[in-house]
Length: 277
Image 1 (cartoon, rainbow, N blue to C red):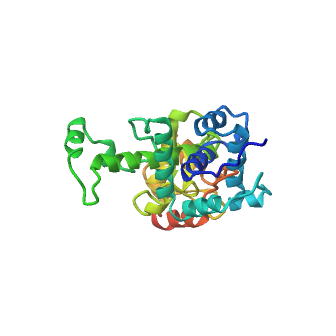
Image 2 (tube, rainbow, N blue to C red):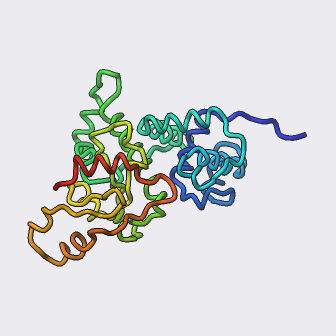
Image 3 (cartoon, rainbow, N blue to C red):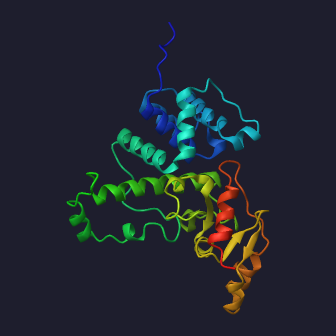
């Protein structure tokens, strides 16, 4: 007799969506060790997990343009999760990371990934002594500040992994492929729009130097995705790094990924509100 069909639970959908976002598009197949591992954890076949991940891909408008189609029936729950992520990426990212932490019995590592230059500086600099104090401090909603920091780490971890996977682990400007030197840069700053904090279309994979420059508004991208350099750079005097890595990249085309391409509205916001003219 064929195996009884089992509906996907909310937790299973969340961890599979997490895997979809954090996995390079070309690795969404049943032989990928990460897909095999997740399948074992949730008691499903690797082909079922790969199929569900590809169903999420079929809901992405950018993938639809490329002709990507679902490998199985896309459920209403699949569509609802995708729409929830589009409307509030931070909330879904936090839920997905929490579901995975529950599944494996371990939360994100005790560090905050390098994402950009200004996100959550206070959280990064909490001393061990202060953390002992804030553990006991209850916020109005009943959570502790430590809870808030954990949620922030989860969202940051999701965002970094998703952006780097989308760009195949390479800087979109230089092609640098050393993970320790790559950041997931927010286009609309972290502090401006909570709902887009985990939105990979609000992110670009940049090396640490160009991440800082982009964050400080010394470079941006025009409507054709070419680098524009702030006139302030020229006023600061010339040195090799100015010529080679700032003035020298003016007009360079941003390499866009196949999935989660930079949102044009977000880039427009950066040009108008962050870029220093």
